[in-house]
Image (tube, rainbow, N blue to C red):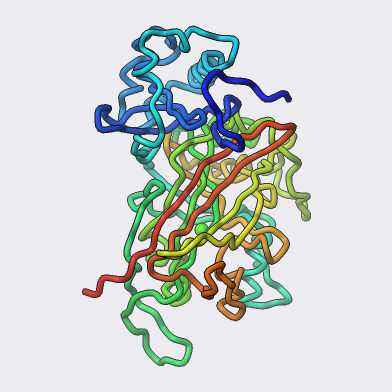
Length: 417
Ligand code: CA
């Protein structure tokens, strides 16, 4: 690959190169929420681009919608063609947009834009597909010798989450209250969670409806995946450990999940595909797949105290996933469960094999027994009031970079009631 050159200035190490061109929803003081494509430090206003007669792959009204669902529902054939046309318009040799009289209306600085939820999420599912994360959790909560439960290598384990509380990067929320049972107490207490944690995840967004009763095979799966975002599945570990038996996570997980605003398309991620995890024992035939289906996405998590500088607490990679997106989708629909455009399917916490690559404070500090040293001299076992947690992610190969920007959110102090 040779990096594409653009006439739009692209800062060094920008996530938003001409090879990327992710979709999002933005507004400014003079523009209502609408669809855009990020490039460098700018956003291309797709509605204005359509009005200028430079794109025609989708109807103009879907570009002024407050969510990308209708645009995505136009189908990959059209959205891929739209993205490739935008790529053509921004490359150095092309002056159709560069010389267009409406350029000022089309190119918007990201610094004056507000980003919104990219899609209306109808349904949200969270998997548990990183073998290192599942092993670490099993060691801490159950049996160090038999950390993985017997089903784990046969089923991409997951649960149905709560779509209503998914918010876009920049979200601030109060420490949740709930029932906690200290280990030495007979009965639970009602109090603010003391063990607030992030979960480093990605999520993929469904790009095509399936019918109830229909399956999506691993081979068909990529047709149904529009793209990916970074995802922080905030978790209250003390609420979780008291409530999760026997039906799994409930109030420990449904108060806030946060996504990065730009959906990086599967098309843009294709060059960064790598071989999947070697799966032993052999999986059921409906979970078999061919080709390179993992993706080499460098991921990192920082904690920024209210008045302090950031400290990176984890460097992981999406390629460590045991189960691929294609297998997750095939499994999710094998019983006929239907998918809708905009549904979000999250990976589960993505931990790597080394201590520096764990995807939650639970694992990084090993349940609080090994606190993290912050750059400002303070220590963290879990997340403090005022802390901002920032997830970043990008792919790099042969001088080409495709990134996700930031997924940032801030924990505020509890409101007692
Ligand atoms: Ca999770």
